[in-house]
Image 1 (cartoon, helix red, strand yellow):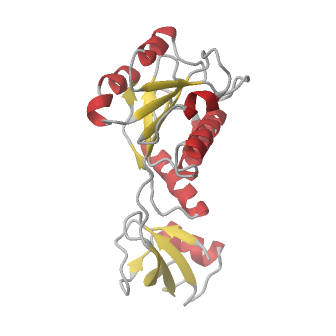
Image 2 (tube, rainbow, N blue to C red):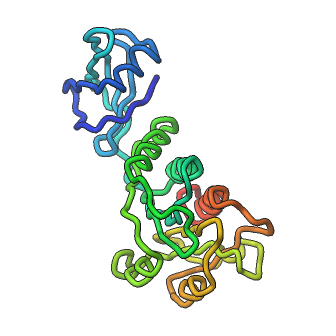
Image 3 (cartoon, rainbow, N blue to C red):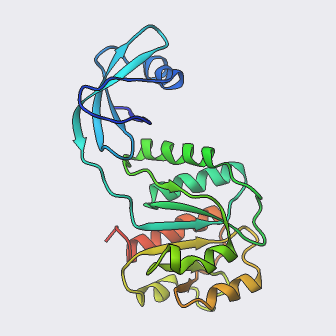
Length: 242
């Protein structure tokens, strides 16, 4: 059954008129007919089975008729990242949503490749990942901040949350050793840009008592690969995979 994100309140019997793109997807791409079922979610009201009512070749409505899953809370994991360019950023954002990030925080560093991030495009990629992977708690996309601002305001905005700093400068190559000593609790993961962190940025992070530096193995990883590797390790040892 197709899954579709709707930016509307979901309740039994409440018909929702779809926009042209969503109508075209269901009617002409998926070739669904009157009465066909679609799973819908909005990140607030759970997942519903809805039925299509066609209104011409290019328009239709969906009416929720059965609650399939109650709303999940957002995962308590913040993913902080230096924005990349174009397709690789799209990939990284999608994978973060799939891997269980509850919030995505762009961070501008000295060597960040892209000076801006299209938040609407990032949200569209998050929604696409949620549609494809059965996720119903849609991660939050936050406004970009500089690394200095992230660090200086951390204890006010994220009290009690440990920041796992993926540091290619660690002497050890084994991330498990660094993570096994941490207590379970609210976590965030920070991935730097392709050029890595500047030395003064590394020193700034390592001075903070809420920061835990962690290596990511013996090979140099691209930032989008590092994101998947780091989130997988953190989720397996300290997150909701256990």
